Image 1 (cartoon, rainbow, N blue to C red):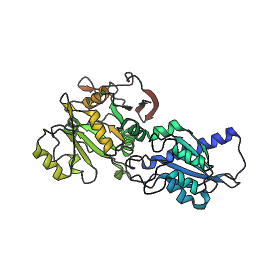
Image 2: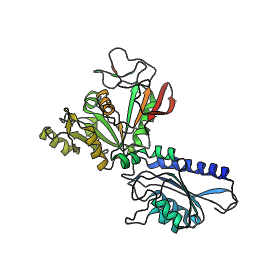
Image 3: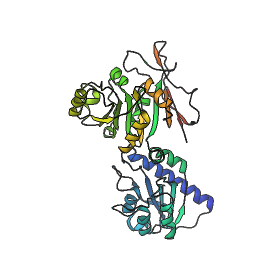
Image 4: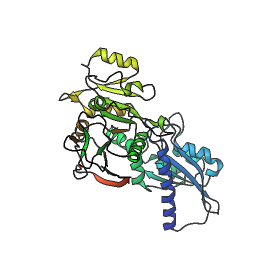
Length: 375
């Protein structure tokens, strides 16, 4: 930037300010960028009157173009001599288009501030090396933890070859998640439910067991004005293909993808009928008469899914916890009790597995919210 030089503390504070804005921007297309993460880029220059944003970009729906390309296109000639704030190390590998690191160099950017490191071996360290070799000043790891938190699905998929798994449960004041035979039981209020819709909008998929489907007949969509098209894929654990053709899930398959994880021995006629309706199937292995979850998650990663929100049922929640496949735990708790006939939650705030740290507490009206993550 051309403006007067800042002392080290002032420059660090300015870098954190603009990186925080880039992280917020990156949320815009979360859950919609396929195998790529949703990255945010902000280009800032100072011509003597103070820093000014001249270009912004976020990874496009589907994963291309990348955020840097979008921000450079918006900035145009104003990118020359400016600083680019990027929430993930710029890519260094050649595809049909040049790497983003080269694009930043060619645009004349003088300084690049990065947040999270990219574990992809085609990128890791190489993007920054291209920039430094071209004389670009590089500052790494600014708000790296916050950026990694925002793109945890991509990082988990890269490192563990499976999606990030978020277990979400709504508990009554006496630790119950529902009542047997009662269908859907309202535990939290409208504000909390809207937050769940936002969580869905930023996920690649929602997963429930067939028991929840038969009991509740859920739609598992995003029902917020203006965000209806952000509903993620729905995945049903249904080894024997018991999913009714008349369910809300099947009736909405033309708008939101629906996958059924079923075993090879399941009724081929039921499968054929659901396939005709537009349902997609994932062949599953079984372990102790249940879906083999580690293998299923590998298959979901191969389909391009980086984040899965597990919403359905005590049995499914227990299975993911037992297999040590949960990366994030989200608990909503309402103010009312369900009583002795309620279904006990497999987990509560006082019984979080070892290795998790509490990330945040919030309130939504009368409901409480707590979230834990694993490194």
